[in-house]
Length: 112
Length: 116
Image (cartoon, rainbow over all chains, first blue to last red; front, side, top):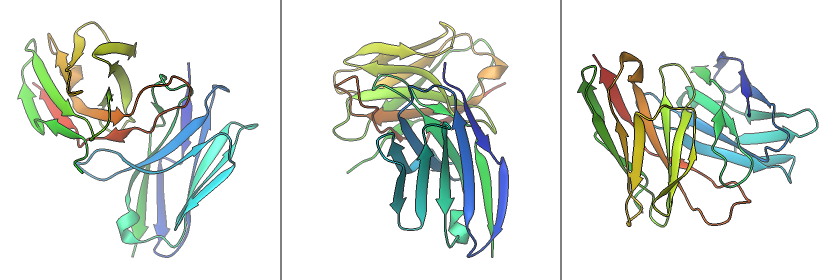
Protein backbone atom coordinates (compact mmCIF):
# COMPACT_ATOMS: atom_id res chain seq x y z
CA UNK A 1 0.00 0.00 0.00
CA UNK A 2 0.84 3.67 -0.13
CA UNK A 3 3.40 5.11 2.31
CA UNK A 4 3.90 8.86 2.74
CA UNK A 5 6.99 10.29 4.42
CA UNK A 6 7.03 13.93 5.54
CA UNK A 7 9.96 16.15 6.54
CA UNK A 8 10.83 17.98 8.66
CA UNK A 9 8.78 17.05 11.73
CA UNK A 10 9.28 20.53 13.19
CA UNK A 11 10.15 23.82 11.51
CA UNK A 12 10.75 27.25 13.01
CA UNK A 13 10.99 30.34 10.83
CA UNK A 14 11.09 34.07 11.40
CA UNK A 15 8.04 36.04 10.41
CA UNK A 16 8.32 37.05 6.78
CA UNK A 17 10.61 34.18 5.83
CA UNK A 18 9.59 31.24 3.64
CA UNK A 19 8.80 27.72 4.84
CA UNK A 20 9.13 24.52 2.81
CA UNK A 21 7.73 21.12 3.79
CA UNK A 22 8.54 18.04 1.72
CA UNK A 23 6.77 14.71 1.24
CA UNK A 24 7.60 11.54 -0.65
CA UNK A 25 5.20 8.78 -1.60
CA UNK A 26 5.68 5.18 -2.66
CA UNK A 27 2.72 4.26 -4.88
CA UNK A 28 3.22 5.41 -8.46
CA UNK A 29 -0.57 5.14 -8.96
CA UNK A 30 -1.17 8.06 -6.57
CA UNK A 31 -2.40 11.09 -8.46
CA UNK A 32 -3.95 13.42 -5.88
CA UNK A 33 -1.95 15.28 -3.23
CA UNK A 34 -3.73 17.55 -0.75
CA UNK A 35 -2.21 19.58 2.07
CA UNK A 36 -4.05 20.19 5.33
CA UNK A 37 -3.45 22.65 8.15
CA UNK A 38 -4.47 21.61 11.64
CA UNK A 39 -4.66 24.11 14.46
CA UNK A 40 -4.80 23.06 18.09
CA UNK A 41 -8.12 21.47 18.98
CA UNK A 42 -9.45 21.59 15.42
CA UNK A 43 -9.87 19.25 12.49
CA UNK A 44 -7.59 19.38 9.43
CA UNK A 45 -8.41 22.22 7.03
CA UNK A 46 -7.66 21.79 3.32
CA UNK A 47 -5.35 24.59 2.20
CA UNK A 48 -4.29 23.48 -1.28
CA UNK A 49 -4.25 20.35 -3.41
CA UNK A 50 -2.65 19.26 -6.65
CA UNK A 51 -3.46 16.54 -9.16
CA UNK A 52 -0.87 14.72 -11.20
CA UNK A 53 -1.70 16.44 -14.46
CA UNK A 54 -0.03 19.64 -13.20
CA UNK A 55 3.42 20.28 -11.76
CA UNK A 56 2.73 23.37 -9.70
CA UNK A 57 -0.22 25.20 -8.20
CA UNK A 58 -0.28 28.51 -6.37
CA UNK A 59 -2.82 30.25 -4.16
CA UNK A 60 -1.63 33.60 -2.83
CA UNK A 61 1.23 32.86 -0.38
CA UNK A 62 0.90 29.09 -0.69
CA UNK A 63 2.24 26.92 -3.50
CA UNK A 64 2.61 23.20 -4.05
CA UNK A 65 5.00 21.51 -6.47
CA UNK A 66 4.85 17.92 -7.68
CA UNK A 67 7.57 15.76 -9.20
CA UNK A 68 5.92 12.50 -10.28
CA UNK A 69 9.16 11.00 -11.57
CA UNK A 70 10.83 11.37 -8.20
CA UNK A 71 7.55 10.77 -6.31
CA UNK A 72 7.78 13.83 -4.16
CA UNK A 73 5.76 16.97 -3.58
CA UNK A 74 6.36 20.07 -1.51
CA UNK A 75 4.45 22.86 0.20
CA UNK A 76 5.88 26.37 0.00
CA UNK A 77 4.63 29.18 2.22
CA UNK A 78 6.04 32.64 1.51
CA UNK A 79 5.96 35.75 3.72
CA UNK A 80 5.03 33.66 6.75
CA UNK A 81 2.85 35.16 9.45
CA UNK A 82 2.30 34.10 13.09
CA UNK A 83 -1.15 32.77 12.14
CA UNK A 84 0.55 30.25 9.84
CA UNK A 85 1.77 28.44 12.98
CA UNK A 86 0.07 25.03 13.01
CA UNK A 87 0.66 21.38 12.12
CA UNK A 88 0.69 20.72 8.38
CA UNK A 89 -0.10 17.31 6.86
CA UNK A 90 0.51 16.07 3.35
CA UNK A 91 -1.53 13.19 1.95
CA UNK A 92 -1.82 11.08 -1.18
CA UNK A 93 -4.47 8.99 -2.87
CA UNK A 94 -5.16 7.42 -6.26
CA UNK A 95 -8.59 6.48 -7.54
CA UNK A 96 -11.80 8.03 -6.27
CA UNK A 97 -12.44 5.24 -3.78
CA UNK A 98 -8.93 5.12 -2.37
CA UNK A 99 -8.62 6.74 1.05
CA UNK A 100 -6.12 9.46 1.86
CA UNK A 101 -2.79 8.28 3.30
CA UNK A 102 -1.24 10.96 5.48
CA UNK A 103 2.27 11.89 6.45
CA UNK A 104 3.08 12.28 10.14
CA UNK A 105 2.87 16.05 10.06
CA UNK A 106 5.15 19.09 10.39
CA UNK A 107 4.78 21.48 13.29
CA UNK A 108 5.46 24.95 11.90
CA UNK A 109 6.25 27.78 14.30
CA UNK A 110 6.45 31.32 12.93
CA UNK A 111 8.33 33.56 15.31
CA UNK A 112 7.33 37.22 15.38
CA UNK B 1 -23.36 26.70 4.11
CA UNK B 2 -22.66 24.39 7.06
CA UNK B 3 -19.45 22.44 6.94
CA UNK B 4 -18.90 18.98 8.40
CA UNK B 5 -20.24 18.69 11.93
CA UNK B 6 -19.46 16.06 14.54
CA UNK B 7 -20.85 15.21 17.95
CA UNK B 8 -20.01 15.01 20.73
CA UNK B 9 -16.86 17.15 20.89
CA UNK B 10 -15.38 15.24 23.82
CA UNK B 11 -16.14 11.90 25.42
CA UNK B 12 -14.73 9.93 28.33
CA UNK B 13 -15.33 6.18 28.56
CA UNK B 14 -13.90 3.26 30.52
CA UNK B 15 -12.33 0.12 29.12
CA UNK B 16 -14.84 -2.39 27.78
CA UNK B 17 -17.57 0.18 27.14
CA UNK B 18 -19.08 1.01 23.78
CA UNK B 19 -19.22 4.41 22.09
CA UNK B 20 -21.13 5.98 19.19
CA UNK B 21 -19.85 9.06 17.37
CA UNK B 22 -21.90 11.05 14.87
CA UNK B 23 -21.15 13.02 11.72
CA UNK B 24 -23.16 15.20 9.37
CA UNK B 25 -21.48 15.81 6.02
CA UNK B 26 -21.07 19.10 4.22
CA UNK B 27 -24.18 20.14 2.34
CA UNK B 28 -24.39 18.36 -0.99
CA UNK B 29 -21.88 15.65 -0.08
CA UNK B 30 -22.85 11.99 -0.09
CA UNK B 31 -19.70 10.17 1.04
CA UNK B 32 -18.37 9.98 4.59
CA UNK B 33 -14.95 8.71 5.64
CA UNK B 34 -13.81 8.15 9.21
CA UNK B 35 -10.25 8.57 10.43
CA UNK B 36 -8.51 7.99 13.75
CA UNK B 37 -5.79 10.46 14.75
CA UNK B 38 -3.56 9.46 17.64
CA UNK B 39 -1.65 12.18 19.45
CA UNK B 40 1.22 13.48 17.33
CA UNK B 41 0.30 11.37 14.32
CA UNK B 42 -1.45 11.84 11.00
CA UNK B 43 -5.02 10.62 10.54
CA UNK B 44 -5.43 6.89 9.81
CA UNK B 45 -8.29 5.71 7.61
CA UNK B 46 -10.93 3.55 9.31
CA UNK B 47 -13.66 3.16 6.67
CA UNK B 48 -15.75 4.99 4.09
CA UNK B 49 -19.50 4.97 3.51
CA UNK B 50 -21.30 5.71 0.25
CA UNK B 51 -24.94 4.95 -0.60
CA UNK B 52 -25.38 3.56 2.93
CA UNK B 53 -22.75 0.87 2.39
CA UNK B 54 -19.19 0.44 3.60
CA UNK B 55 -17.13 0.95 0.46
CA UNK B 56 -13.56 0.78 1.75
CA UNK B 57 -12.03 -0.30 5.07
CA UNK B 58 -8.63 0.34 6.59
CA UNK B 59 -6.67 -1.88 8.93
CA UNK B 60 -9.00 -1.67 11.92
CA UNK B 61 -10.62 -4.58 13.82
CA UNK B 62 -14.30 -5.51 13.64
CA UNK B 63 -14.83 -3.68 16.94
CA UNK B 64 -15.05 -0.61 14.72
CA UNK B 65 -18.29 -0.48 12.78
CA UNK B 66 -20.34 2.18 11.11
CA UNK B 67 -23.54 3.16 9.48
CA UNK B 68 -24.74 5.72 6.97
CA UNK B 69 -28.29 7.01 6.94
CA UNK B 70 -30.43 8.04 3.95
CA UNK B 71 -29.66 11.72 4.69
CA UNK B 72 -25.92 10.84 4.31
CA UNK B 73 -25.10 11.37 7.98
CA UNK B 74 -23.03 8.67 9.58
CA UNK B 75 -22.18 6.98 12.86
CA UNK B 76 -19.01 5.31 14.04
CA UNK B 77 -19.38 2.65 16.72
CA UNK B 78 -16.55 1.19 18.74
CA UNK B 79 -17.18 -1.81 20.98
CA UNK B 80 -15.07 -3.20 23.83
CA UNK B 81 -12.99 -0.03 24.13
CA UNK B 82 -9.25 -0.32 24.82
CA UNK B 83 -6.99 2.31 26.28
CA UNK B 84 -5.37 2.46 22.84
CA UNK B 85 -8.62 3.67 21.29
CA UNK B 86 -8.04 7.07 22.91
CA UNK B 87 -7.68 9.45 19.97
CA UNK B 88 -9.29 12.20 17.94
CA UNK B 89 -11.88 10.70 15.61
CA UNK B 90 -12.34 12.67 12.43
CA UNK B 91 -15.10 12.55 9.88
CA UNK B 92 -14.49 13.74 6.33
CA UNK B 93 -17.09 14.27 3.66
CA UNK B 94 -16.78 14.29 -0.11
CA UNK B 95 -18.89 14.03 -3.21
CA UNK B 96 -18.84 10.44 -4.39
CA UNK B 97 -20.03 9.06 -7.71
CA UNK B 98 -17.33 8.16 -10.21
CA UNK B 99 -14.51 5.96 -9.11
CA UNK B 100 -11.70 7.48 -11.07
CA UNK B 101 -10.91 11.00 -9.93
CA UNK B 102 -9.87 11.28 -6.27
CA UNK B 103 -12.37 13.34 -4.36
CA UNK B 104 -11.58 16.36 -2.21
CA UNK B 105 -12.28 15.55 1.43
CA UNK B 106 -13.36 18.13 3.99
CA UNK B 107 -12.88 17.34 7.66
CA UNK B 108 -15.00 18.06 10.68
CA UNK B 109 -13.64 19.27 14.03
CA UNK B 110 -13.42 15.75 15.42
CA UNK B 111 -14.50 13.98 18.58
CA UNK B 112 -11.82 13.53 21.20
CA UNK B 113 -12.28 10.17 22.92
CA UNK B 114 -10.50 9.34 26.14
CA UNK B 115 -10.63 5.74 27.40
CA UNK B 116 -9.71 5.25 31.06
